[in-house]
Image 1 (spheres, one colour):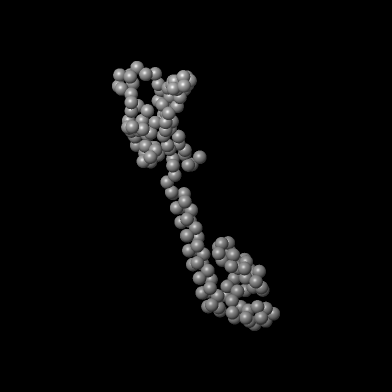
Image 2 (tube, one colour):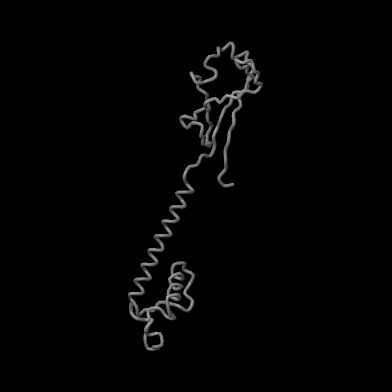
Length: 164
């Protein structure tokens, strides 16, 4: 704005930024300001209030952009992820109506998948339960038959530690 590039050879002229001789050196000065790595031989002079105001605006805008980016990263990192989940399977021998024998038939047992209760936060003791309703494989089984049937319930706890 002040015509500093028009007075490059004029040693009596006091420019806004010493040793600024074109777009590339102005761009380097901007990067040196933004990254606070030091100016080297390019430095703003005290005879240029416009340059000082521009420098302050760039520093404030740069700080705001940096704060926004740090905030975005913090939000992304601090979002709760699915850290642990639990599943249960009923494993038992079964004979189909066609007469085929299946020795290890697996049936999923609901432990809160529909309600989100299968996602665990492992900081306190938890009680995991399977509700016996019309969708449960135990719905038509009497207590006496349940005691004499041969089956296993396998509970699978999956989890991760974000630090690793």
